[in-house]
Image (cartoon, rainbow over the protein chains, first blue to last red):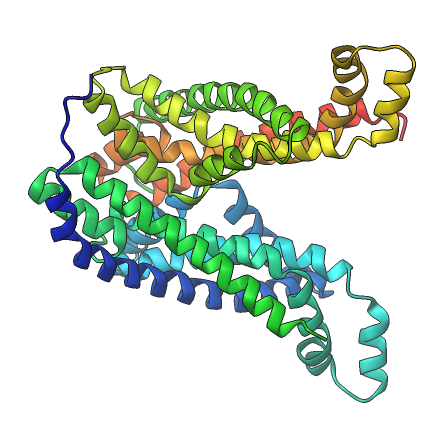
Length: 221
Length: 216
């Protein structure tokens, strides 16, 4: 059954390229998370507002992000924007797609977390003379981010896993893209993808450990 | 109003792809739920002994699904199995779903108060009678929303089987886009079909929840 000899030299030769790809993956994931959190905060604020147009926009964004596959969202940005004449490179389409998805899911988590922040906080902040924007940024958001820290960590791991979809739209310098490129050249599918899987596993575990350390340090008081 | 080369036959091609998506979702969720029930019960009954099992299932959740499909495909050749790609797709998605379902079932069973279990045992029920008549219904009601979330996520992840060569909804739309070069229209229709499928599954879930919670 197993007359397959794993070619370790193929892994050894490919490892530097794969690690470079892993760095690009991490960059894309971090960028998409930062933008996603900012957009999710804006979407949450929109949902709390009294203007129906803003509420509808936020609700539409969140429902599209949660009810359609992330690959479909990336396709929409890569192929669909081309119809408008906006030819985006693969990395921008991947980044925008993952950010769109992140923002939708995070906005739902923030909505749940917002219920755990007492609205006496906002009233107290307003009575101290802050306007709504200042109250939101300085009083509500720090408490909110502490409550939803664990879901944000989960979403960060999801973002790293979603960057693997870039290869389908032609991205060739993130981890899966580099793996596929080497696969096409050397046909060592099993060795290369098992190594990529181990690198993804280590990256995600590293992110969770760093997040735990960060949480322990940030939320000491 | 506006001209398009999108014909009724193209729409039927998309619906064929959607049917394949639903089939993949059905088999993946079936395998995942059955596996998840067994493994989840195991993890609930023996939490310390099954910690290595938890690590193994964690691997399925921490490696991207696309890479799992590629590895499944190459293992198919390496181990000489020569399974059809539909089977590989269903089994890989099923393993992925069972990794999530294990934790869903475990959390459902953990939510049953141990006092209820002790009361049932003290009434003379055997372990299995207690499990099937007392713990399982309570655990199911607690775990149902998470299970429904997993089903919807599985339906969306079937888009990745295009890598194996299966012509599900998104891949069928790519065939049509390559031919008529109208990506925005075709992708909007595909998004609508995904939205309708997702909404239908969520509606069924809401109906079931309302039926189960009539006394709340």
